[in-house]
Image (tube, rainbow, N blue to C red; front, side, top):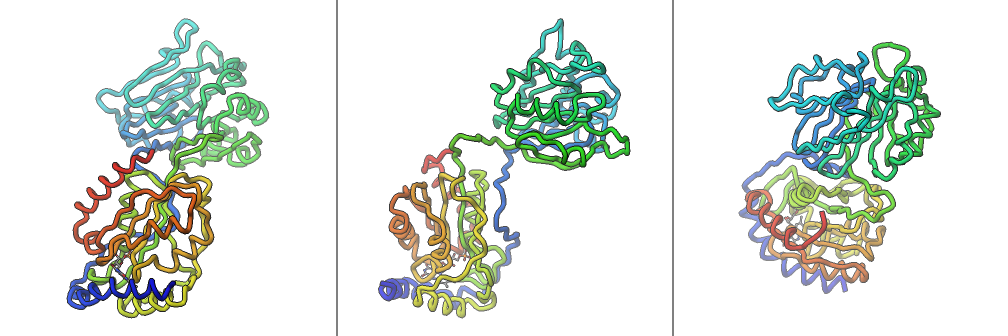
Length: 431
Ligand SMILES: Cc1cc2nc3c(=O)[nH]c(=O)nc-3n(C[C@H](O)[C@H](O)[C@H](O)COP(=O)(O)O)c2cc1C
């Protein structure tokens, strides 16, 4: 069977091998890091920087900047669009620290958030601010303190308790489906670890993060040791000055997540000279950017593929095809059960996938998934990637593939990008 495929590949290959001799004189060098697994981080993410004590800075999808309880840290350079204050104690109300404010910057303190015993909601264009109960201890009066639940356009909900002990409202808050909840845990002015863990169980957020736990006043404004001792479920520790991406996770629900899985080779390549970013990787990047997908690059465990001679590379590949080889690959670091849709891309090598792809295919069962093939090539198109995948995974749904000429990825990026966009839009895949 492989002899037959080899002959077919050989025929397809002859045309561009001839062309290659003249085309390889031009050297195109493109830069770009080769990463194996990078979580899909698109511009649509909300970022939260923990600045110590009860202070956080949030940057929304549309680059609006929100400071909550300004006090700790000194990174207040980003111009504020919204300042939230949970109560007027000095370590929550240093509003003057936020000197840089955009023209329409709004300030919401406990006075606006809690009026005549009623907790208010503020529906701003970039965030919905829901004020909730806080207080219930001798240092914090329930009539003068609030917490906030912030809901962003990407659906992520963040709860900042402010200063508090267990509140009555917490018993009802699990229905809010909060993604990230920050609990004060100092145990001196407010509830401590044990009570905060109880609250975390009640509120039932997907991630529970201890904050406002600094009692030793060493200037760090966060007690890492105390945070480590906290025994809340789904605990996550965010250190001072750490910035996290707030992503929507639907625990217990089936997620529609996409993985882009591909191989791609650098060095001297057909008709493009020496390249630092492979042709297929350029297309993979475009898909990842468009869909906010995750990435897995199939890479050899020991990369002995020549980088200085396209000709030798073709000889080695031909030998691998002939021997039906399974070159060893680096560890598979993704969990296929996390994904519904998998884009599978590779350069066409002798009319087929590079054999390294079969090493992966034999390790990972993609039956039941939606698979979208793509190739880059020197003239052979998709080379039956779709049918090969159908044979490998008979219970997968194989979508319409895309074949891009390798030279175009390096030299005509804009038109390749529109082709990729058009193709993905036509696939009708959930983002
Ligand atoms: C070993 C080898 C074999 C190839 N065989 C074919 C082929 O059979 N048909 C074809 O159209 N292109 C073939 N090419 C060209 C590549 O498919 C094309 O240059 C591709 O875009 C390279 O992608 P990459 O940079 O992501 O590895 C071959 C290239 C190499 C290195």
